[in-house]
Image (cartoon, rainbow, N blue to C red; front, side):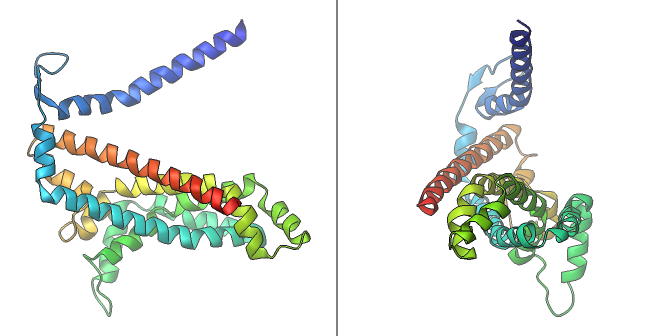
Length: 267
């Protein structure tokens, strides 16, 4: 009986939490399709005009594509660098973990405004001037997602006991590279996918750093939303819903690709 009461309490709390988190999204969704909504609980009339206006604006699709390829490049670069680096440090140089932990949490300690000002001052003069270009944004994105990539990959390696698995594979005659590709990587791949999705979501929603670094030169979806939010609340809601649906689609695709990759590598 006590266990049933505890289970019912947990389910009730989870339900309340889900309602609390989903209510703003539901309100935004309704407002994106509302024509008149002033004195009633639900919209008085409905329309697709805000959705049509959003897709008629070529700037919206350009901003969506710009955000997509900048985030994908940044995440892919971070994954290519951090995956082998974290593996080597965790397995072969565990004494360096304390230093790495302190290093990768620095993006948490530095506010986006301070980081943007520092980057502008550093790269706006001298031999290399990359301010206002995609290069400085990709570099900044790489730094922003360091904590998510490092901690996710490290936790996956520790969970599967990567050192023991690697030693066992080498005792059976496998080379280090083959052991990493065929044994370690398939076991940590779910954690890598989660870190990738979290990093992508964080970058796709980044505004402060993006606006200060390239806001006047490159328009991402968040910069576009900020520019149009004062024009119409209905239109801004439509853009926000499209942003959410796009993130959902990209996450689903990446999860499917991750499962297929895991099956291929596992063979």
